[in-house]
Amino acid sequence: MRAKTPSESRTVMTDLVLPSETNPLNNLFGGELLARMDRAASISARRHSRRITVTASVNHVAFNRAVPLGSVVTVEAAVSRAFKTSMEIFIDVWIEDRFTGERTKANEAIYTFVAVDDTGKPTEVPPLEPETDLEKERFAAALRRKQLSLVLAGKMKPAEATELKALFTS
Ligand SMILES: CC(=O)SCCNC(=O)CCNC(=O)[C@H](O)C(C)(C)COP(=O)(O)OP(=O)(O)OC[C@H]1O[C@@H](n2cnc3c(N)ncnc32)[C@H](O)[C@@H]1OP(=O)(O)O
Image (tube, rainbow, N blue to C red):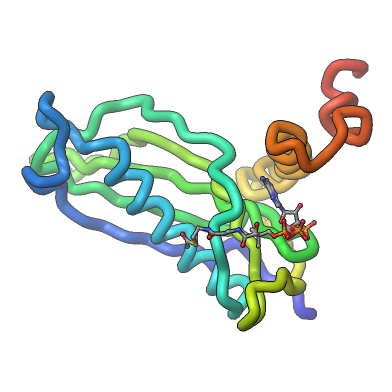
């Protein structure tokens, strides 16, 4: 299978924050942001694999900044590493200043998607070839995050998590 670059799966979704999507502090409801990120990540995973893709896990979400009512929010997702049938998707969330248009990073998240066939059976995906320094950095750390996610899900024994162990022994 031909290797693909993160730019081939990059997905950018821009939308407003409406009153029905806010919490009592008039900021974007966390679950609404999770759904927006899931949609963008799902499109990214599909663009990389050209298969049906399902969310396998949400590995990390940081709600660093509240997103106020009326904000213009941009969710930007791209595959950060492809394994055999799974893909790590890195998502950056930006808000845009109403007057200057300047973008500020509000949140980020990391999701794992799996490509499946028509029966829901995991199927192989193309490898990923990172290009920029940031893409290379995210690619390098992705195996460690995959192992942590599998250990926490009870799908890998901690003793087998070689990349994680290396963190503590180096
Ligand atoms: C877009 C949406 O919202 S879809 C709706 C929400 N999602 C779903 O309904 C998915 C339901 N879950 C499933 O269908 C299955 O559990 C699947 C397809 C995700 C995984 O199926 P499994 O039988 O566990 O397959 P398997 O053990 O071979 O794992 C497949 C891959 O997922 C990876 N994986 C599975 N669980 C996790 C996890 N918790 N964290 C990270 N990776 C995981 C495996 O390491 C493997 O990766 P690899 O082939 O790249 O090495």
